[in-house]
View 1 (cartoon, helix red, strand yellow):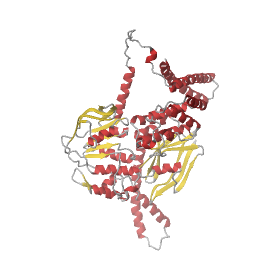
View 2 (view 1 turned 90 degrees about the vertical axis):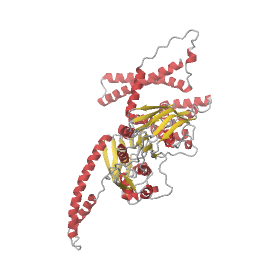
View 3 (view 1 turned 45 degrees about the horizontal axis):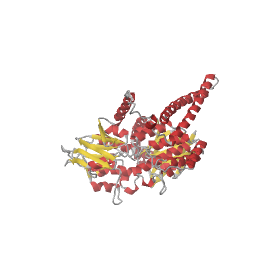
View 4 (view 1 turned 120 degrees about the vertical axis):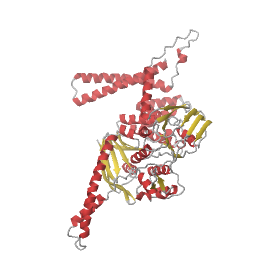
Length: 633
């Protein structure tokens, strides 16, 4: 089914166009990534598709049966609204029933009235809402959203983003059959386990997707097409991220070749134009028109020439940073428990762990802005920290980009004794001359992040502390940052959920496992995940120790040991029995149809696919039924 057609779309802010005369189509089942430099119009294009922004020229056609659902970078909520009210604000009978049932059975809520609870259960039965309730629970659980009575405005920015993501994922299950899901940086503020779950969820769901992300592993896993806005033009690449890089490199090589030819032709044509008498403009009008076309091609701005920076780093002495028997806790949350480590020259350490285990607090302690409860943190005299925090760029008064950088220093020193000017350094980080005289207040969010990063590197630190450096950065900037850091001679410690970035840069990991335990893992993130899966497999395959039967006097009745079932679990057990019976009957019907030999090929293929799904469902539900049956005794 044809979802979206975009024809001849153009949009400008000021003199420079974001994009000009771009056209593309979105078909049912497409999973498309949109990539471009920050400030090139990605978010504007998404807003045009949702109808919240209007183009200068061109048309957008969306099929009347298609519903567009979008996750924006900043979440929206009403003042005083709870998590439950925010997630279930869509007026749909099934959603309303689930909202009522979840509110009554929330562990934080008081014991519900039996009659009201019974009515809510009956409503769920009547609407067949239990399947949807199960999906809602999965989404909320995986995104670590548990206290539904909390006010959204009291949550952190990351928690609000997860609530907004949960709302979007739940909404698409209740929208019309045909939904275009638009996600703008969905992996920001998710820990790696959440990102991996979201990858799997979007890959399994029958959803049509348009996605903006800097996470290259996520993009590669989820998307089958990449659209790039480059110099106001749109380029479309079928396939994965690797294919995109290959095709983009080939295109740029072709562009360089054709631009060089155009420049040679331009020189000849310029010489001819200058020889023409002023009064004879009608003689070769077509050739003059062609001249201006050639001139435009010849002056086409190619990819920014990236400077090779051999950085003259501030000398790093023998003593860098030592942590001795460091303890740190917030209330019941233990962050470090007797942590010891001595940093060495040139170390590149990644810090990973679930949200809320204290990774950012650990960085603050290294920088001295947070003190340990006990133990010592000794910083060497020669250490110059470069701190890239999630707080972002802080500017006392609005100024132009070039002024901001020159206030730090006029030049950047190189190892060979030469210097790079502030303007050249800005160009390296994709701020062309015309952008350097823009006021900081007029930059996009991603451009401000890029300028913040540049300003830290420009101070020439020898110990970089990077807290989520990839959030809101575009792929070209990430590539430049990675190249810069690959040749960087100082120490680097990185907290990031970007697995591609971590794999490329770090030598080993500090894995925050909770309860104050920090594992020093010798490898990158992908190697750590493989090791973790191997450990889980070994644990699962290990024979369980046979417990000796307790003496008669010590034996306890099974009923006292068994975990008491909640109302929800009892209800789930009852429903599982019905669902398993229905699936058994469906399997028998499908078996009979396939054995009859009378089904057309397309129906036979569909039945074979469905019987595989039914068998998997029977396995899953059967295991859950056994688990609940044991609890029931």
